[in-house]
Amino acid sequence: MSRIFNFSAGPATLPQAVLEQAQAEMLDWNGSGMSVMEMSHRSKEYISIAEQAEADLREILAIPDNYKVLFLQGGASSQFAMVPMNLLGDLKQADYFKTGIWSKKAIAEAKRYCDVNIVTDSEANSFTDIANPNTWNLNPNAAYVHYTPNETINGLEFQSIPDVGDKPLVADMSSTILSRPIDVSKFGVIYAGAQKNIGPAGLTIVIIREDLVNKINTPPSIFSYKTHADADSMYHTPPTYGWYLAGLVFKWIKDLGGLTAMAKHNQAKAENLYAAIDKSDFYNNPINPAYRSWMNVPFTLNNADLNKDFLAEAKTHGLVTLAGHRSIGGIRASIYNAMPQQGVQALIDFMNDFAKRNG
Ligand SMILES: *Cc1c(COP(=O)(O)O)cnc(C)c1O
Image 1 (cartoon, helix red, strand yellow):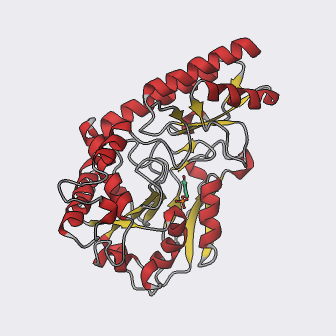
Image 2 (tube, helix red, strand yellow):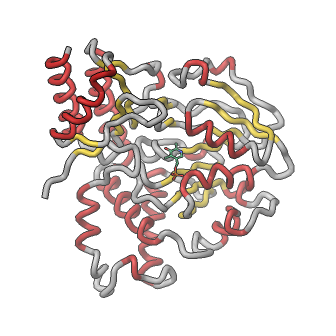
Image 3 (cartoon, rainbow, N blue to C red):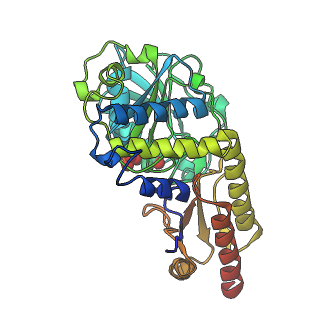
């Protein structure tokens, strides 16, 4: 068996140790005589898996007690609707940062429910920069403020939490959650699809401050945070296997030293890759260095005619899924938690060699 280095933006590479443990437990989880996939979500065995996963996530993210953690279906895209459905209350306006393609999607969905005020708009600079905070336009009548800490497609990442006063701050952390420590108490809601940094697709994690769960509103039950919070995410069948696998990933992070260790690992990988891009006159990354993503590194070849050759040759070196998003083109290396330093080094070595041969 040979594993390649998979730079996919999502679903993305998972830690090999986690996959091996899942494999070992596939037919018989812990003497139960069945696979986790075959268990009732109400069984004693499954509840123990679910509770352990939540406890480990709470520990590694240091989630305060006044926050609920929900394990839902629907993907991050479902949260684009659930956030306004649940958080507007009596208000009819919300603030959104527009810093990339994912925040644009969140904005488009929110407009179905409320008036959206754009706090700052990076579209004019093709989502390569974020304007100075003293130019931000926050609306005092907004019910909440939404932003996308890491724009997966554009490779633009906030390196600190924006100061939005005392409005609930809502963050789509799909592609950055668990990449570094964060102060959860600064947020009203954090949500993330699992398939970037947590586990398999199909699981969506929502971390929500309790007072926001109890807002008075009446979305359909399945789209209500209160429904899921009151039922400990067991209102209906949760994505049981994804929840289990996420639990294995949380344990893997704990064993490696938690999010402080993870941040060191991720920062080093990103710095090495950006340094290789910056010191060549063959490759280019357009993002303001103050906002470069640790997780998704888009870059272009100065001669775009060579893109196809680059991707094809990279593949023969076991470096795959490096094509940029179809809306942007070029190359994108997604280097989430589970991408080892050796994978990034193999990519850098290949880039240097390709530049030498084609420059
Ligand atoms: C991948 C991604 C999404 C979409 O997630 P789905 O689970 O496919 O709905 C939304 N936001 C961000 C930032 C993403 O990276």
